[in-house]
Length: 138
Image 1 (cartoon, helix red, strand yellow):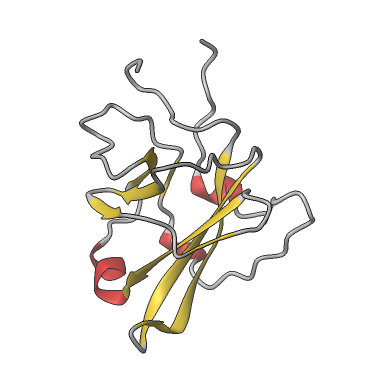
Image 2: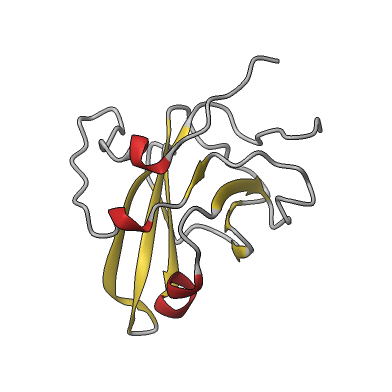
């Protein structure tokens, strides 16, 4: 794998971040939904989301069309995350920084609770608030 690479095809964005009740064994949590312009690969491993140093092993839900993945974290983990923390996706449970994976966005906690208003293309209008990184050619 090349240094500073991505492990997926397409463009991944954060579709929404919202607080949900009964997320984790009856306790509230934070749900983060990702959207990809291409289908997420399905295989023996699963997609892991890393936010800063916090690693979420697998999505709690995926869309039937394989364009969306949803992850849930508890409120303590959310409160400990730093605004501006890099977001990474890895195929399997790896440390993205050690594997030199390029972040697809940076956390902006201010969009928590903003409603998702999808236009059918997966664009929630929140993408620019997450400061996505443009893919470089090559």
